[in-house]
Image 1 (cartoon, rainbow, N blue to C red):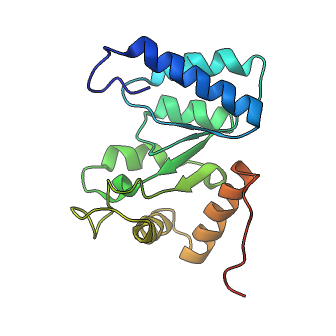
Image 2 (cartoon, rainbow, N blue to C red):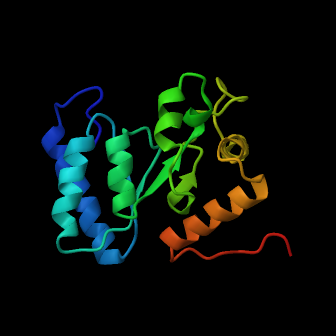
Length: 169
């Protein structure tokens, strides 16, 4: 649900969101949620479905509040961080996620947007996710290798139907 620019199609967004949730349930696939200015509404919808269904969820390009983060962590939902986390003006987001469980953290490119520092201003590409990983490994004070291992394992826990390849053999 994205109410940032307009709420003109709010009802349609709800319909599409619920269709995606139903598809997720039927196909046993995770729900990837994009939210802007809709935390309260998304929490309400997810709570209503959780009464009857297990929902594997990731909040894509997380820029939510502490309340949304706590809701995610209380429900074993994942958050995915993009290059935004590396921006100078993302101090509030860094404060919100500073105590997040790394067991529910993913990283992403959100290509072609939101290139991380030092590539900010350029068209984003998957190769730039390394800058987000480097930034976050420093932020959480763990080795880059360990950070990559954690987020890689998180991906395969959430997307359990994905096949893991060993690229280093």
